[in-house]
Structure formats: structure tokens, C-alpha cells
Length: 497
Image (tube, rainbow, N blue to C red; front, side, top):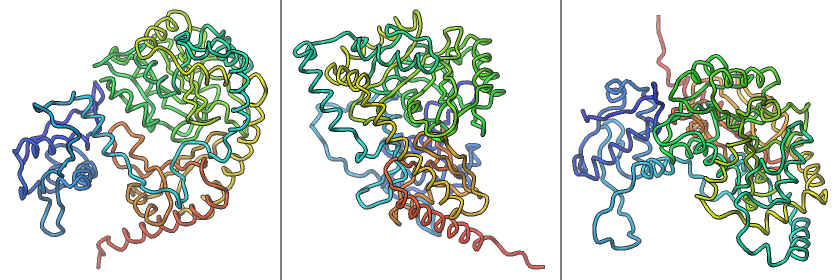
């Protein structure tokens, strides 16, 4: 039996998913020569029992190593070490260098991401991004031309690290229209919501600290925490939002520094919490004196239902730091987001922002301000929302008609995504592989869990496919799921009496 040390998700959260810890330590032993080609690894059941983990966790670790060519599973014989793939050397190094442990964990996460390959002819239900055919390219080009004509060379110099004042005020004006008492000087512009997440985490936590996150949650939020050496502890999601009883207990822990949440059009679930849930969440955070990082990346994409005040709008104590982005409502290449905060939080964000870089792309920020003020953004949103509603309706109808009985999902009121849970404990990585071969792309649920464990959930996105493509894709997906369930039942042992 090989000796592995697993960091568990108890009081401190985990630095990396358990299956990646297992895979990483086996890989290290192969590199060090402690395991050589031909060595036999313990059976999945035996290793899972010795480590006290689920068999699926060990199975996933072995699958990861097999995909890298490190091990070879032979039916009826066991799992054996093959060795390491020859790596193309980018440069000759005079000495062996060792990557930082955080960097290695990030590399392990990257290697575990699902590979989609060529997506040109596939039905794309996996990507959380807008349809390029809906990009307002010509209208934005005119805004850019107007901006250069009026502001000229000053846009090509270093700017204020806080970002273009005109854009900050335009964003503040839109937020005030939704009930937030926000001024332009409370906004720090950044390179999309992804940089905003890192800034928000670093504002309150440092390496070795722990933060609370919803589970499932946005994969890049987990990656950002790991990249900063920050542990995460999960708060399970229910149909009406994060489990508030668990949140109360979690935020009572002194080592937990903040709570990251997506209350509106949750990624990956697509759900939106109601007013009562938001008010109670803020009461819990206030009672424990813990800040809340509210990710409002899709707040402009509501196409049905009534708007619910954001946590920022409801916050009376200065606990909430809010993240905004134009990547989903306009186009990802804009790389423009914002962090909204109060008081010393703004000063801290500015210090962190300046330490990261010397500011954003002023021409794009100024052009976006013009685009907002001209009304072009709202005209674009009207078209985008209409298209998203049509695609949402096609998805809801298809799920109802095509998926196996017992499959669960909730009807989103906006955004791009829906979380679908299969009725049997089938790891959606298996369904992903079947669907990939059939030309349908999905996002399997393990990616949105802090420990990467097997999941019967999957995220489906309506951003890149037409209603007709969505209907075809769900019909194929439903057939594949029923086929998987049928095969599992056929393999179950028959009891004769």
C-alpha cells in the first residue's frame, strides 16, 4: 500500500480537491522514482478504504493519471504505472527548478478541466458566454470613434488606477436606478469580474485563511482562492439559495474571513434568491461581523420576473463588496468589470489594484461610458434579453419532453445557465463523454464543487446555441442519459428466489 497524506475538508477547508491530491502524490512518486513502470497500484476499493474516501474519488484520480499517460488500467489485471509522457522542453535549464506548491495545485486543476476539442460543429451547451452573432460591434465601434475624436491622446496615457471617471459615474447612475446608494468614487474598475474576485478575496483574506463559498459555485472563484493560498469551506446550495443554518455556523468560525455568493442568476444553478433570504443572509453576516462578496456578474440579464434588490442595495452596515461585469452582457473581449465598496474598503481595493497593474485600458473604458450614455447599451440589452428568453423557453420545453423521469431543474428568470440534476447517482463526467462523441457539449458538475467529487449535476448554457440547436441537443442528451441508466440496470446482479 502506498502512503498518501490527504488534507481533509474539516476545520480548515482544502487546498485542492481530494482526487487531485491523490493524483498529484502518485505523480510525484513516479517523478522521484519511488514508483516505476510496471509497479501495480492498489485497487480502487482498497485505496479508498485506507484513505477513508469515496471510491469515485480514487477512480477519478486514476482516470486523471491515465489521461496523462502516467498509469494504465488493464481490465482483469489491475492498474499499473506506465511512466511519464516525454515533455517538450521549451528551454534548457542549467539546474532543476521547482514550482511553487500553489502553482502546482493550479496546474493540477488545469489538467483536470474537461477538454472539449474542436467545437465548430458541436451543439454548445457548455460555455457561459454571449453569442458572437449578437455582439453590438458596429455600435461599439462608433462609440470608440466618438471617444477618440473628443478625448484624443489623453486616452493613450496612464490613467487613474480607479478607472475612467466617466464610466464610474455611468455605472453608479445605473446602480442608483436599481436602489443602490452608490457614487462614482465608490467604484474601482478592473479587468472583468475574474480580477474583481481576486481583489475581493485579497481585501479580506490572505494565504492560510479560509473563506466560505456556496456549493456548487463558480469554478474560477475556487481557482482564484487556491491561487492565493486561501482555503475554502462549502455552504450547500438549496432550491431557495445557500443553506442559511450552515452559513450561520460557518461564519461563526474565527478562521472564516468572508462569504462569496451569487444571489442573482447563480452560476452554475441559474437561481435567484428572494428578498427574505437576502435580508436574513445580511443579518447573519452582520451578527458575525463578516464581509460578503456579492458577485452580480449577470445583473443586467433579467428577462422575466420582478427585480430583487441586490445585497449591496440592502446593506446598511457596509458589509457588502459587489462585483460587476460587462463580459456577459456585451462581449468578453472588453475585459471591463467593477468592484463597488464603501469607506476603507475602497482605499484597500485601490491599493491592491495599483499593486496588480497600473490601470485598465482607458480607450475601452471611455468608449464604454459613451456606449452607456448614448442608450446603445440598453437597446442591445433589449435584443439580448429577448433572444435569451426564447432560448430559455426552448430549453425548459426540451428538458420536460426529453430528459428521464425524475430529472430536476429550476426555471431561471435571467442569465445564461440552468443546473440539471439526473435522477440516479450517475457521474455526469460519464454523460459528458457520451455527449461529446455525439456532438453535444455540457459542463459536468464536478467542476463546480470544491473537492471535485463525482456529481449527478451539470450546467447547461443557452448562450451559444439557437432554440433549434438547443432542442436537438437536449433530445440527444436525454437519449444518452436513458441509455446510461439502462446499461447500469442491466449490470445489476439478479436475485433468484
